[in-house]
Length: 340
Image (cartoon, rainbow, N blue to C red; front, side):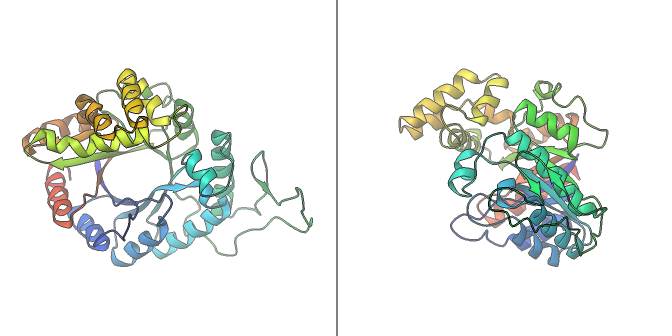
């Protein structure tokens, strides 16, 4: 099992000393560093800065939102950064959710599975540069010949030759069909909430994965002798995702919790959140759930639970960046000594 560092997306201000964190991760033997985007900072610009100050660590988006860029725009960006980093780029992508897609990007969210398939086809055509890009689909058409077209478009091939004809692409997915699509068409899968004790719930979806298919799992890691305090950030995050992320009638995270065996508890957390009882919602998140998808508590306890992650199908354990630089460095060193 390999290690990754997740720097997330910038909040009110840029992530403190993110270049030093990436450099430290490379020195410690981490395999990869991930950056994200929501509706603020983008995921590629920090990676470009990291590329200029590192030499070995893989540079990954986790995740790039499909609606943020057309497939060929993403291909242009990916090819450029792949050249600048000497072939270290991996692209983690995802559809995001209707609140962001329709509210921020002004695009429709229907049929996300279809959009993902079409997006990947065009992206791979553009990167491989084997022929001019042509595609006729339900959501993308190149050249465009729809309403208000001048009918002057023609198939084009990138004037820049790629460093690699194939750039690895991972799919961030939670639903069974999306995970199955990841196994069928992508180089890896990025689950947001996964337990090493319940990987069997994904067996059907992952049945067609290749031998070198990557599973890159984000894991909240907090070293603290007080287990209750260590679990609190994870409970807070879970309450937010169940209550504040996604529509009440269609919440991907809540659906996943149901498949993991925590359906009733997830319903209760969501109800409390929508009633404005956020503190009660956080307290209602089951300790057992947070504990399974995290590495929290005293060091000896974390060491023991790391063994269960090593036995799982997870390829890369992605450690999230904490709020303080010193905390992140200390945690990274501790985990690296146990894994690398």
